Image (cartoon, rainbow, N blue to C red; front, side):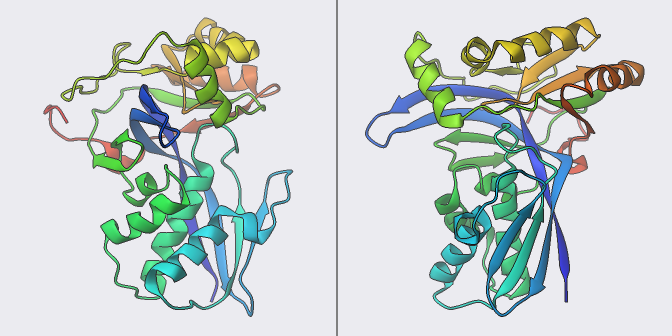
Length: 288
């Protein structure tokens, strides 16, 4: 039987770099990540041999180098037994190298599928153990919720956020930004790290929507800074970068402005109207 899975992208509403640990060569972060409606499809069918095919991107990725293949083998190691072979087709809609976590989401979605489909009986903490070995962003996608990510990405606190009375437009400039390079540029150019207070909340304002990578990435990719300026000129209330780039998110109060942005930029960028996952929102005025 063929099974179809939905694998969502994420955006970072804020992203703070809080330090660089040279002993493990990793950065401490704090970020509010939110799953969004843009998603890949993962089609799974029985097969004699395990294989992964990715469609929708120009790069051809061998099965054994695909993050879903890595998830499968690590899950087998974790449970100590072989799982049935299958053919996996990933239909990509989420741009790669764009700060949207598409590959990490594919891995997490597939791990959750394995646990349910083969009645492995693992709880979220156990699946997270496997997910953390696959990649630092993978555990976040297991929760299907907005969450504050901290440390090296291993600490995940699901939260609810206030609703935004407006519209979100995802603008991918059709070029990528290498994550390792973004960290390297920040280390070279930053004047020191600052740490957010533990009670740092979230509201839809300039104080709470930011990305520490923006300044160094914009210097490296001036075209991206130009696109942000254009989005502001077109009427976006706020524009911010997701992850280490290169995707920008434009927030607008009016749908007409969103439509105008999409029409104006569709020839030079990949543009998607997106929603935040319904389960991300809180229903009271309490702080998260």
